[in-house]
Amino acid sequence: MMRRDDTPADLLGERIRYAFRSRDLAVEALTHRSSTLLRNNERLEFLGDSVLNLVVAHWLFVQYPKFSEGELSRIRSALVNREALLQVAQQIRLGELLRLGEGELKSGGGRRPSILADAMEAIFGAVFEDGGFAAAERVIREQLTPLLETLDPASTPKDAKTRLQEWLQARRHALPVYQLLETRGEAHDQTFRVRCKAEGLGLTADAEGKSRRMAEQLAAQQILGLLPEEGA
Image (cartoon, rainbow, N blue to C red; front, top):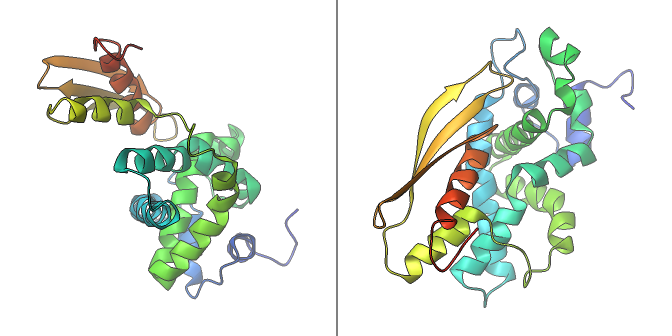
């Protein structure tokens, strides 16, 4: 439960065990674009996505010195995705801290997976902007360690994009190209349409999803279903 005297920014700092020097960054990270405030967390989300990928890549590079690039990519994909970020957000009860517009509040936006996952990336971006790479690395690793400990590196399933890339690389084909074709819907409920091209094979597939990443995975899965040695 939130304590009466604590602001959402204060509680966020406590829950991720990081003391923000700039309280404005913490507030921005918690502010969804549906809010009437001028600054929302989209820019910090953009930054946090890159920081998260770099931190996890370096972490796994050191943690598993004998693993190949494909094996490292497979484990990273299990840690850097909406489901993993949603688990972290739920663990710190992020939904009750978010600043949402009236429409999102009424529709339960504080429980929406996409909003929670995006806000988690924004928080990582805010920590990086506020305290630098070392601070962001500490916070990200602390939040993701419980998830990493539950993974079996030897049996972590490969996602569709990783499988497609490895299949093409093994046969010396060009890597797949992903193109955003369309974005539809209101800001809080968008649908993304993406095209995946395996140009060396002359294969193309379109797919839709509630995030660009999800659409790319579905398009890659369609291409995999057309490959003679892979299958769906």
